[in-house]
Length: 217
Length: 217
Image (cartoon, rainbow over all chains, first blue to last red; front, side, top):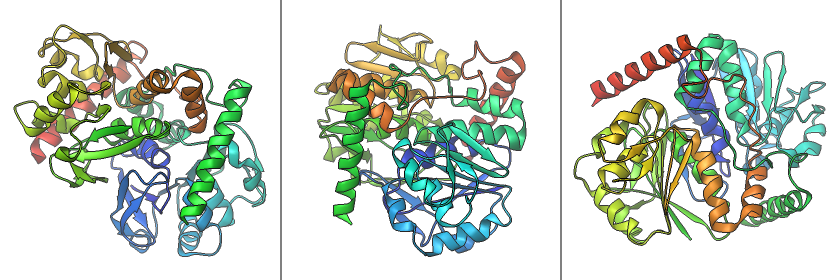
C-alpha cells in the first residue's frame, strides 16, 4: 500500500512525521516521500532537512496521500506541478488527506469545494477562499477526504485513518506502539482553551514567523 | 541557545521531530541535528531519511541535548563516540533529555545510575540494567536530566522543558502554535489502558519489528 507524502521548501516537519510514524506501521504500508523534484528539502525554520526520495511522477497512483502544511504552502497555491499531481492522484486514491495548511493545497487543487474542512486555527479564513466550509473540528472526514487541524493533529488524523484502513484493533496497537497517551502539561492547545494573553502571544509569533518566511522568499 | 539532537541509523523519526517541533520555537533556539558523521540517516523502517548537518564534534557544548530512540539504539550501547559525546556534553548542558529508548543511550553513558528514568514500555527492563530505577511516568525529571516514555511522549517532554527554559506562557504559546490539543480516537496509548488483546498484538509487532531490524543488521 503506497502512502505518498509530498515535501516542499518551508514544510512544517511534524505535519509530515506525525502521520508517517502512524501510517508506516500499517501492514504492508510503504510511505514514499516525494516532491516536484527528488532531493533535500529544508523545513520552515531552516533547522532540519528531510529527503524526498522520488519525484511526484514516480508515484502517480498512491492509495493514500498526506499533504503536510507549513509556510511553504503559500508558494504552492497558484498553478504548479504539485497541484496537478494532487488533482490527478485524488482520482484514484482511497484516501486524500492533509494536515495543517496542507488543506490549502487541497483547496487550491479544487478538491474542497462545498466540503467541510479544517486547517491550522490561524489559517481558517484562507480555507474559505477555496470554497470549503471551514470547521474547527480537529479531524474532518468528508467521503475519502480527511483534513486535520494544525501541526500535531496529524497524529490523531492518522490514527483515525489507520482504523478505517486496517480496523480498530490495529489502530489501537499502533497507538500503543507509539505510546500515544498524551499528557500535555498545559491546556492551551486550541484557541478556545488558551488564556487570552497566550492566544495573543501565539498570534504575534505566527505573524512574525510568517513575515520572516516571506522575507526569506 | 544550541539544542543538539543526535541522529543514527535506525532512529524513530517522531522521537526526534516531536521535541524539535516544540524546542525550535523557543526564542533564540537553534536546533542542530548532529551525528558521529554528518550525512543522511535512514530511519528504523527505512522509509525516511533525515540529514545530520554536522558531526558531533561541531557541537561540544549544547545547552540542551535530546537523545531520540529507535531500534538503532541497540548498536549504541557499547563504547562508541556517541556515548563519549553524550557524557562530555552532559558536563556543561543545562538539560540532558531523551525520548523512548534514547534513555538507554543515557544509561549506557553512565548518566542514570540511581536515578528514576523512563523509556518505551517495551524496554523498561533494559533500563534497569544501567542502574536506573524505571518508572512508567510519561515524563521523568531528575535534576537536569529528563527522560520521556515511548515515541510521541517527546512532545509532552519538550513542552515541559520549554516551560522550564522560557516560562509557562511561552510554553503555552508554543503548544497553541502546534495546536497540541490531542484527541486520540482510542484510549490505548499505554499498556495499562489498552485492551489485553491489543497489548498482545502490540508486543508481537514490537518483537517482529525488532527481529526484522536485527536481521537487516
